Every structure is written in C-alpha cells, then in structure tokens.
Image 1 (spheres, helix red, strand yellow):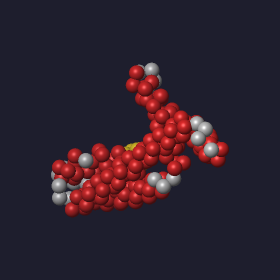
Image 2: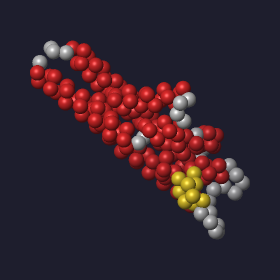
Image 3: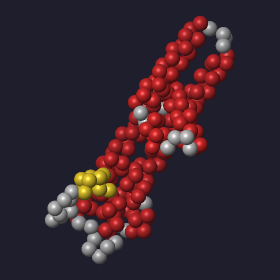
Image 4: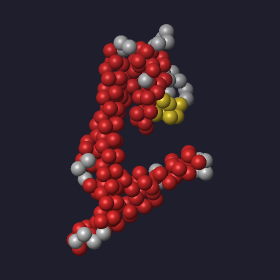
Length: 192
C-alpha cells in the first residue's frame, strides 16, 4: 500500500456517509409510520387531543403539499400559502366544525404526503446500496459543518446558513469533492 492514511480517511468518510444515509432512512420510516397513524386517527376522528397536538408536526412534514391558495366557501378573496392542515384541524373542535370539503381535502393531502414520503424512502433505500452516495453525504456533512459553526457563533444569520447549505453552488462543490475523491481512490487502488 502506497498511502494508508488516504485509504483510512476515505474509509472513514464512506462509513460516515453510510451512517448519515442510514439515519435519514430510519427518520423517513418513522415519519411515514407517524403520518399513517395520524391519518387513521383523523379518519376515525377518535382522539381529538392527539389530532390537535400533532397537527403542526403533520403540517411541517407535509411541506409544500400542505400549503394552498384557499378561498373559503362564499368568500371573495384567496389566502395565499394557507396552512390547510393546521387550520382545518383547528376547526374540528369548534361548534360549526370544518367544512366537509376541507376535511376531505386534508385527508387527500395526507395521502399524497404519505405517497411522496414512500417515494423518498425508496430513493433512500437505493442510496443505501451506493458507496458514491455515502461519500457525497459525508462531504455534504463535513462542508455544511463550516457554515453551521459560523451560524452557532453568530457570524452568519440562520437565513444565510440555510441559503448557503441549500444552494446550487454548494451541491456543485460537494459533487466536485466526491468525484475527485472517487477518482483518487480508484487510481490509488489500481496502483497498489
């Protein structure tokens, strides 16, 4: 072996990326289980405390699917980015209750969220078999730790942190490091 240090570092990066991918897989699985349980309780309308308590979490998991341009029945204006899940669930315990169409829309939205989450889970399951994805995830973790430290110290705002980590240029830098390390790893294994 020419350079055991490089092989050790590459091995640590691959294991770190694998652990991050496993963690994402387990989190997605847990979220899907939670969403299915929530949908079941909402269908039965059995446990109002549970439904009310976890509505914000469901809204967060729904992401863009939970935001709609909403116009109430007989309303004259639209509410942009209306959080349909939280607002409809709030109406469950009111005297009038939610409009039946709204409740049906929430149930359909939750079904869509579960379907999309299952697609993401299947993608992550495929990623668990790909060492290049593990390497990419480890570089993403390492490179995002720099802005995280800057945010923690107060040198950048949370908005700037989010913008920098989710930017296209960040993805390109991570991809570049991944490709270079994969090429060096392949060339190192050929030469030894």
